[in-house]
Length: 183
Image (cartoon, rainbow, N blue to C red; front, side):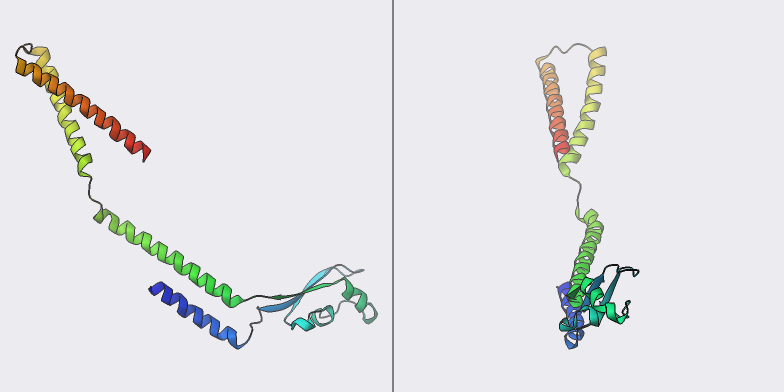
């Protein structure tokens, strides 16, 4: 809201002087004269009214003597040009205001984002489970190699449960990694 107010105030400040009288940059008559005899081509600009936009009023000093002026002026192409420098200035101020606001917003987000963003509990849980499963699998492998074989139904069920947990963990890891790669 403040930016819009600032843009309106700047626009008003720039428009008021322009309404009083046209700036010298706003109107001009541009004559492009090609080479003529031993005279090189030249471009002439003058601030004159639209009715006076012709070679006789714009080309000053006249590069040819009096009797060749008409032939020289017939070769020249004169165009009246009018533009609004005030409008250009207002658009530039608005554009710079928008870019400045976006830069401020980006800086604000860069400062505030780490404070707002909390670590993902699911990701932490997966990493903790992965570490626990690695430690359990190492311990289970050590006991199965050096210890007695699982004879009881309870020990076989625990072994099957551990294998199932490892498979689920691998599936979670695969899905989670694929999800990370896609996003």
